[in-house]
Image (cartoon, rainbow, N blue to C red):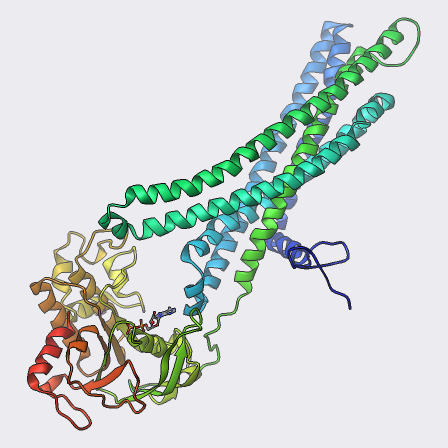
Length: 606
Ligand code: ADP
């Protein structure tokens, strides 16, 4: 079998079209399938509204001819014409309403499916796919697709109907005049094809430039604090401005081309219509001066009315062609995402009746897929017994968070085994075992909903359970002081909480899950003394009776800390076991002084 490819390297079929887009068209149609009923009714509306637009101009001519006979005939003709327009517009309304409705339903369904597909993807996927771009697919690509399968489709059908109808009526009225008008069509079509090519190229370029500008804006706005710190608003504005100017330069050409083509095609069209009018006028003249040609002034009046839209239809078809190309691009991106299977998943994973917090790393090697050149974990082994506390110490970038990422199975190790409660993580149902692990980071994310919903984010819980968790986390008191208590909205649109308050809510959120394993990330965010004390107390309460892993960024200051369970020495990383209660620091051989231990303890909750 011979495969053929086009310039873009896509495989193409016999017709020269990329194979992918054929699949895409079929799938776009499949996507619209649930809307078939609506689209059917909409098409009936379309048929009647287009029909009335076709028939009504006939009455223009009849009005002209009737005016030469009697007033009553004139009135009657005008009234009929009005009636036809009225009916046509009612159907037009139905058409516009139902097509838009079908599109809205389609896009709503598509967005939900797409979001669900995106959020199921493994964490590594989000390392290489920018959030901004994914959101773009959700908002604008789906919009393009919606327009393509509904509004643009309906316009296409409408235009084709109009083309056929106009030609039919013109032939019916006077074949020879129509012939004159049509002789121009090949020239127009040739121009239209060239115009289409140019338009396609320019619009792609325009879109690309705009995307570049979007990336630039996203970068600056999402790191606003950095921009502000360096008073770099002007610089950010300038950089964005440069990108926008580039898109504007393409936009200028686009405007000129669009305007120019409309002008040219209009001139050609009305030139042709002028020729027709002259020739038709001569026939009318002949008809009235002895040579019967059958052409009345009324019929002549109708001709340009039918004739001129033909050119507009041609123009619109070109624009439509470019729009459809876009839709194909958008839908390829959408379908790729919809079809993507998350790499880390285990639908058939085991769900156990109970599990303990024992964690074991057995010669684990790991490299981030997005940074294949750097091996982050070079064969790390350790065992954390249930109920014990493990501190991960090491310099920034040493791989502490990476270990936590592997325990959550955000990523799979390249080799070696990560196990929880004696089970290889790969064999467990991820959604189940993740509920047994809770993470509290120093800068926790709260979602844009009530405090109550934030605490019960991981599971449905009763008000009593929520309050109990909040009390354990030293959060109940400050929450109760809010006017709306647990119903207070937080997150982007809600009230601003202090760092310490956020953390305590995050601890409550973790506690309500009753995890067997607690992961604590001790980033170096500064808390005021009061807050620090409350947070530390909450953390200690949370640790009680649980297996805990602490990412202890500041423990790196404890120089004497020795490796305990780490069997394979890791160049960067130290894994240490400490028992928190009883102020006991258990290590393989050496003992760490209590002074350092207090330092450890102090550091822990920061
Ligand atoms: P620590 O928590 O000890 O500061 P990390 O585990 O965060 O260290 O990082 C270890 C190494 O892995 C660093 O070199 C870091 O740049 C890299 N790294 C961390 N996260 C990612 C990621 N999502 N994609 C690629 N590289 C990463």
